[in-house]
Length: 95
Image 1 (cartoon, rainbow, N blue to C red):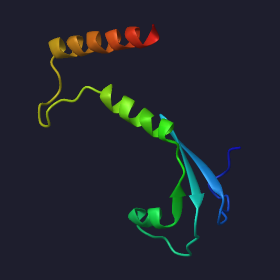
Image 2: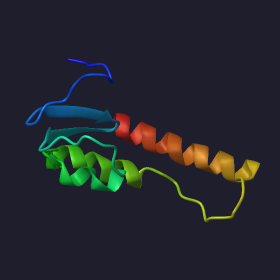
Image 3: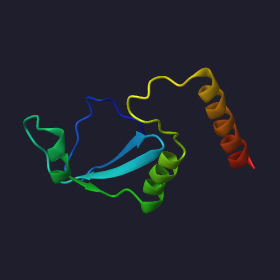
């Protein structure tokens, strides 16, 4: 069931957060009255996300091509090479 952002969360409630490719499962441990820094969220939730879901992150990271920082935009030749590599990966994953 999808809820609106204004939905009141209760202690003990389980929330599914869809952040593709992973669907995180979180349980609310405690509520707070004031806004807090994002780093402190871990203090107020239990992460119940299954290892299978987290494995999707590792697979997704491997599929990205990384360029050196400051290398600029790829040349036309590099772009065509990247396109062929990406298309080959898609064909292999479809089989």
